[in-house]
Length: 448
Image (cartoon, rainbow, N blue to C red; front, side, top):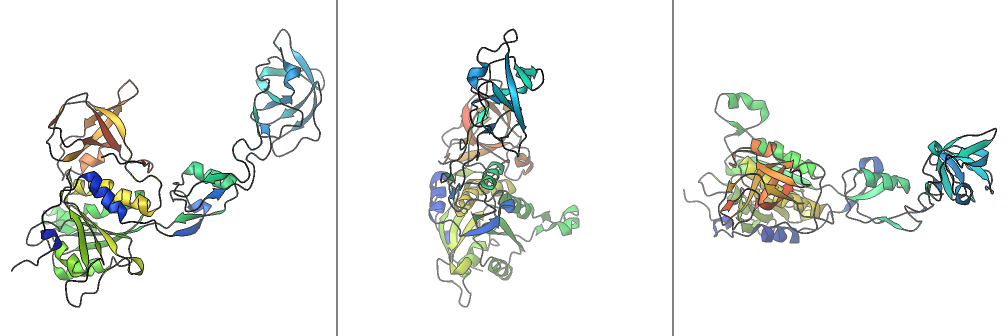
């Protein structure tokens, strides 16, 4: 049977990774905001500017357990020349002094307690000893003029606290609590539909088929769903479509209303690779196909709902409110799928979530060994990182780098970026690497 003509039958675009990413990002806009309780805001992206209604701290307070006093009253204090002060009261955290201090007086304070008027010093407890009656003996003048946290030294009332686009980590959550924000506006989580296809794939409940050597587990469904969650999105796993138009059409239709559709496999030139044809039948327009990266060169990007459905009677599949649905066509090999997710889908999610920094973060490393390469493709090799003893990092490959060796990613700390012009990387070469795992750090400029 003659294959249906498809947008992906056109010549490959072979875009550079940087151009491909910029073309993707240019099509996307941040999602709308929603309000959530502060306790639920960790990992979300702030969608409003937050201004402090109060000074922080709200009063000058003690940074130490000790004695508030005047610096001139303890100047020159030493073990053989102590200064003796009269303690007029004790103020624990949560209480307030009852009067200002005068010359020769001190107030016993706990850390965080307000400093009385007239005091410009807190002598730490270990620089004192008890005196007679209500006296304290100061043995050092090292703390003169120190150990006070001034009112408003962190924030002033009316000052901008956090800008929109900031990823909310534990520190940001604490700052928001300190300025009284019980609720906060954050960008809605992106809904990412994930579709795998292939008659050879099964889910975990059919693992006996794998034991029998007849099928393989659809690991991409789980790995990509985890990657979406780690990037702050909401995965919609659409299941495994079989290699038929009917099954593909049914599964793709389930992506209606999503913010992104990620497909794996089924977009090459084999007779049974029908994904691209069914997408076109449902109103798909390809933007580009193939990028100059390894692994993952058979990557494509386009949008459902950008063209009229090719098949008569096929309703278009679109995103929310009929908007075109961006479609990321990832290769089926598990390493290629995860690498292209990190390079292209993850930055897209940052853009949808309203992040200020969109690009993969990098660090500079040196290669531990000589690495054969090939020119013409930007390579992303899986590597472990170890301290080099000189304040930097030493990168060593995790082992064989085949695109089907998923454990090469599981063992990796980073993706080592090998420039496309290099045919060999000598030991000790300085390269950039994209860290894997940990917090969702990002950079303001692209690494390639």
